[in-house]
Image (cartoon, rainbow, N blue to C red; front, side, top):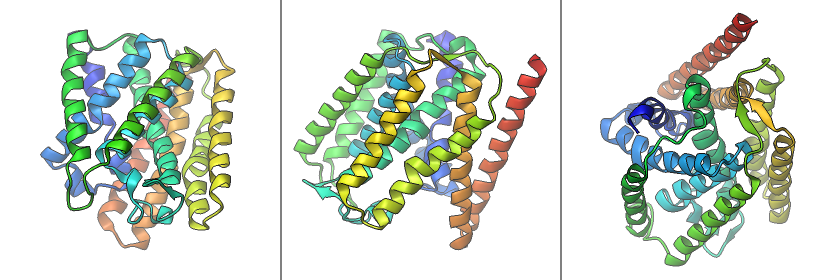
Amino acid sequence: MRAHWKPILTLLLLAPFLTELLSGNIPASQFFQPQVYLFLATVGYGFPILLLRELAVRRQIGLAGLFLMGLVYGVFNEGILARTFYLATKVPIGTFDGYGYVLGVAIPWAITISIWHALHSFVYPIVAVSYFLPNHRSSPWLSRPAIILLAIPTIAVGMIMFFHPDKDHAAGDPAHFIAMIIMSGLLVWLATRLKSRPVLDDPGTLRTAAIFLGGLAFFAFLFIPVVLAAVKITVPVFYSYNFILVALMLWLIRRRASLPVNNVLLFAIGDDTLMAVAGLAGAVAKQDVQRAITNVAFMVVFTWLWLRLRKRVAGAK
């Protein structure tokens, strides 16, 4: 584990930025409070992401399977920790209030936010670490004792948060908890069936189209589902849209034996940049100066990353 402290620390610190801060779910003034950030960097994001990444590497799961493992993290975050899956009203994105609510689960919201987490919480941070620390890309980072050491508090805190009532949620339903465990197990099993296609390869020719495809992902996986929920389109249509979209994405990327890590990172930059632009627009509309500054900062960082990618490729020629 000592030899891999750098990628471990990078992943622990990075994941909360691309999720809670970028989405505006937690304002910067609260995000950087030591107790808040410590929780997010450990049990909230860091530990479960590290554990899932470790499983993926040890089972030689490729990028398509990583997406499915990311869905498992989405289930853990929103289905176990935050328990937003079970909200009939006051869903974090209001257009999902009461939409497709069945057996105590807001299924359309659960699908949308799990896909979002799969990309932003899991795949994108792992790809970023793989690009900037390539020597650690395909090797395990944790020893077996370290896996146990991280798994114990992750499981314990998850169960406490799920079954403990608070001012926003009643105590979790054991049937829902069991359903989340079964769903997670099924997703892990499917990920292992996909195996190693495609692998993240060394940087290759930078494909500018990747950044536009990433922007398209923002519209396809988040913006359009939000609109479909807002117009209350018939639920089977919503499910069909997401199923076809995810199946098509997995089919397209599994056609490739490998993908250059710089182009996958460029895809992530495109998605995240539009996320920041949308957040800035919302902040301006609500006159939220703090969030506006935060999103401008993200846009500057993403622009810097884009220029850095171009410079590295140009320098390699």
